[in-house]
Amino acid sequence: MRILPSFLSVWCIVVLLTSCNQMKEYQEVSEETSDIHSLAQPKRAKMTHLALDLKVDFDRKQLVGTATIYFDNETGANQLILDTKDLDIQQVLLDDSTKANYSLGEEVALLGRPLRIQVAPNTKKVTIAYTSSPKSAALQWLTPAQTAGGEQPFLFSQSQCILARTWIPCQDGPGMRFTYQARVEVPPHLMALMSAENPTEKNETGIYEFEMKQPIPAYLLALAVGDLAFQKIDERTGVYAEPATLEAAVQEYEEVVKMVEVAENLYGKHAWERYDILVLPPSFPFGGMENPRLTFATPTIIAGDKSLMSLVAHELAHSWSGNLVTNQTWNDFWLNEGFTVYFERRIVEALYGRDFAEMEALLGYQDLLETIEQKGKNNKDTKLLLDLRKRDPDEAVSDIAYEKGYFFLRLIEESIGREKFDRFLRKYFETFAFESMNTQRFINYLEKEIIKDDEVLAKKINYKDWIYGTGLPQNCPKVTSKRFTQVDAQLQLWKETQSTDSLNTADWSTQEWLHFIRQLPVQMDIEQMKQLDEAYEFTASGNTEIQAAWYVHAIEHQYEAAYEAIENFLINIGRRKFLTPLYSALVKTEEGRTLAKDIYAKARPNYHYVAVNTLDEIVGYQSAK
Image (cartoon, rainbow, N blue to C red; front, side, top):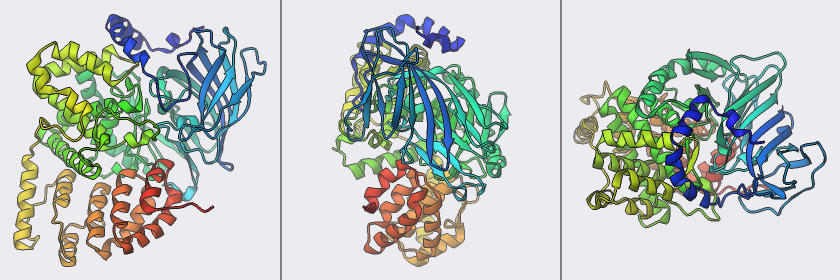
């Protein structure tokens, strides 16, 4: 029986029906693309629904239980093939509870082992009894000392890009969607949350049940367990956090209500019913993760002044670009992130003004230029469409997908006008709702809806150069910021006078301070560093963005007064965006390499696999044999 339609919301059904004819035109392209990062074969037998029954064992750092996989077998295949990695498969049962014949294939580097289950043409589901590994790459088990409260352990998952298979047997690719439900048992004093319908308070049994009615790819499967509390902001938004963090988080995120309204006015109704935020412990490796209904967020954006709320705008925008219309493979990652950065900055502009959004865009442009310089302008990884064969798709996570993707979409907007581009994007999200998008499919849609055989417009946009070319095309949109120009003037005044007394910085935002720090001279002496630090308290700042930017200068100029703060920062913060440049700066000198290895030995147990996977190589870490 096909169970997927029964789990779609009424709104989703309306969208799919009204855009049915439009989608048929692009369906063939979508189905032709295979996923090089999955060992599953959904074209033979496709997973449609997942039912989990799991117990969370903090003592053994394992999930124990069953995963029931419902699937369509329209081809009459005799096997259902799933992705697994480091899972202990104990038994597989068919529909009628008879034991199935199954086998695990050979280990494939990066991808794990395919689970091949023998099925009959009329088999509708299989139930897999399994245990996750304590070393599951997706799961981070935190001790009480690693949490804000300091009394209870914590568990969270991070399934992107291909880590869902390390805690659930599934078809693990962004182009493979399924609905899910779950029963999760945790210690009674803790609360469990998932990327699904969630409880708002603890219960005495420690048993929680979840349902995700909309089909999602496996990388959006998420689980968190800890000493958590909830406070609503309005009827469809709220915040989960440890009690010690909750009040500050709610105050910081209260503007999310306006963000949802702005987003819906731009590109259509939010399809996921709720938008809640879970504030995780600081070891979370990303700024945020767009798990539907429940964004996972780093506490490092709680600055006390709402100055870093663009990250929340970004994760909210993923409710459309990424979660609703998803990159079909990780080669097409820019289709998730480039669209999301564009959407994020439109939300920011609507709430905080054009000047503020342009500061964000210019900081992004600076990041993009730095990434291209580091990689090399002819490096194939500076293309939007990537080639990640035999590579970890986590390597796709760079400013290329985010910022080059953003500037490409901004170019289209500037070429045809914002009003027309907004209509295009709104139709795009409606047409391909709950579908996968690959780069060729997007090009087809772009040519049909916008270019329309207009050779002048095609030349102006020049999508081939943006998508298939390396580096940054010459027709990249120009970004200017009056506020940054004023910052530059103050910086020049400091250079000329060597005094901070006359500088006018009283009303500067985080973005202006970041620009100031980034533009500081390459050559500075210790006295200059000390003067700036005493005047503006960069080392002791409570804003992690400012700290991270300043600490790079401190390392490069051997400003030892900041070293204790840098070590404390690296030990307690797990956000890869901050860790990578700091460790990279440290290892440039012999003294710095020694310091980096010493700090890393203390900090590494606090980091998630996603961060460790990047940092081990930078630091030169070798695990004990």
